Length: 297
Image 1 (cartoon, rainbow, N blue to C red):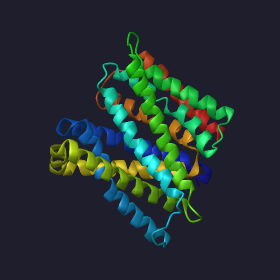
Image 2: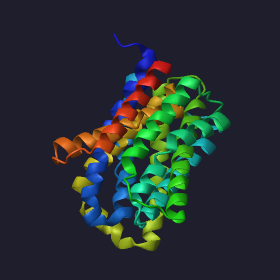
Image 3: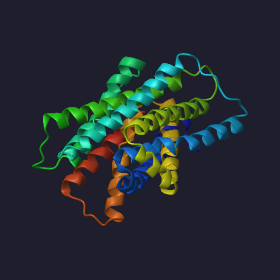
């Protein structure tokens, strides 16, 4: 029987796998909806499934709709807004020629989330965890940064800022979950997913309504594939938040780097793309970092 102390790791791996599928689906939608439209699908078509998850948890636990304390709201709003801000910065980075390098900067998120988690939540990072975070992050950077690639100052700043915003988002959502007053962590995580997705859906819908209403119409027309992306996005968020309820944001976001391994596997076995020596070295470091992280727990 699985040791409950390992549940956070199981939840994180499931979330990373679901997110990999969601990302693949969103890539297909980008041609039809544009980058912002495909991103919005994650939120707009995700929150109905989040509502279903919330109803299912309420039935399973025999509980009514919880009433979170006032301290819950600043954290969940901060998490939702910084996640949207991180996405916007990432989209801006996509306009840079050196996006591959920018991606490496974005993936410094585990390092930043360890710092923010310590400052805002008091989440302690042990020496073993620190070694795991640095090792796995180095692996991602080695995979992403190829010889001869260059990064402008703008690209560097965009990548680091996006990583910081994603880190703050993880800390914000974990802060919201921890504000539960008794009750089940499953309920707290599920409610946080639902509230976060509603806030993000309203915000991006209002933005697109003012800036590019044609994209909203295109999203409605592409509702079938959007449902798949929305479901996988909501499923990923559900398990991310369950993991954040049980472990520090730094641990969760470091183990989440297995998403890079899943994406590499798809590239290798589905698209038949060869693996370079540099990518193999990066994978080895990520695996070592993940092993160190699990050992440290």
